[in-house]
Amino acid sequence: MMKYLQNLGRSLMLPVAVLPAAAILVGIGNYILQFVDGSTIGTFIKNGGLAIIDNLAMIFAVGVAIGMSKNKDGAAALSGLVGFLVVTTLLNTEKVASLQGIEASSVNPAFGNIENVFIGILSGLVAAMAYNRFSDVRLPDAFAFFSGKRLVPIMTAAIMFLASAVLFFVWPVVYSALVSFGETISGLGAVGAGLYGFFNRLLIPTGLHHALNSVFWFDVAGINDIANFWSGEGEKGITGRYLAGFFPIMMFGLPAAALAMYHTAKTKRKKQTASLMLAAGFASFFTGVTEPLEFSFMFLAPALYVVHAILTGLSLFVAAFFQWTAGFSFSAGLVDYTLSFVAPMAKEPYMLIVQGLVFAVIYYFLFRFLIVKFNLKTPGREDDADLETEDEDADAAEEPASGKNETAVIAETIYDGLGGDENVLTVDNCVSRLRLEVNDMEKVDQEKIKATGVPGVNVVGKHNIQVVVGTQVQFVADEIRKIRKEED
Image (cartoon, rainbow, N blue to C red):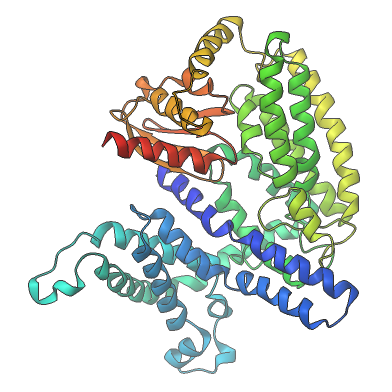
């Protein structure tokens, strides 16, 4: 079950990855409209971005279908779209009113919100399941044309037809529960935002934070913070409260923590630590991708990670309390911050920089104090015996094969550390991690993998392991897939 949920979290990153394009278009459009009210060009550009935001549910249906299907095939994507169209057409307000023989105005409001990310994800999951089950099915000769991949959208449509009949009764209950959950957190105001921030970070190791994010960022429980912020709908100072507090952490707090870890590293490890912390800190500041930095100390010093989660919750609380808002589409880095500065829903976004500077000081001195006081084994502070082993592995890793680029060498070393073709069963990746399934965890040489300079290795089950690579993970994953094909 855990593996399935983690795969779902990884699959959600594909549709989320399209959001920066929407943010850029909406940001540029808003920027133009700031100076030329009613500008045709500004409106045109902004609407281009809103075209993506307004159809997020459909994009999620397609993206999840691809991500959860065994071959990442286009037939799964088409099936995800088919499934989404079936359920949203059968259960829209007009169709439900006709079925119930009542006026559209009397239909349960849940059906007026049937085109949401939750339904998109459900459609994608059903399509992926249908692809994995039916894409290799051979029908009798009379129906041979519909065999294999052609059968998948047909079966998806049939399953979603039955699912729609169930959802006719279940969806109003589910929707009401989701709305109640969102309203409960929302009703707590700034405290609710703080609690959300705290649990958001705590769930990072499992990859399940995406499920929590969907309730607050997308139109699952009616909050829809990302879309409302960029479209200019909502209440200024309130819309974006589940986004704004991340900027001080990702742009200032975590890079300051990286500096503290560098300063407390052992002298002979400072150079290596500096390389890791600089790359991870810059990724956090510029793009808002924090996993390379978080995974570098998450398992080495778990107590320190809990402190980080508490500080994240505090940051969201502070920003929400003072109603300082800015928004992001991908993550809370400099790129999204700059784009959101002129958004209509942004309120005193410059104060997030002030807050960020304060949090940078807190992070630096608190992390430095805790690391030294409790002798926490953050990067560069491992025991000498471990360091000697890592040095030996690093020396071996630094001997690249002739004609191979650096990424290929890293991929080859990681793959070898995982046990090679005999031990590695599946290879996948999300935005910053390799997600792998191995036959025997005992055959995995974690020290050899870490010697490549990756921020961390996370064993998440008896057969599942994650290697935190960073923003270049896609290229490392591609190289590993090439190795597997060559060996096949």
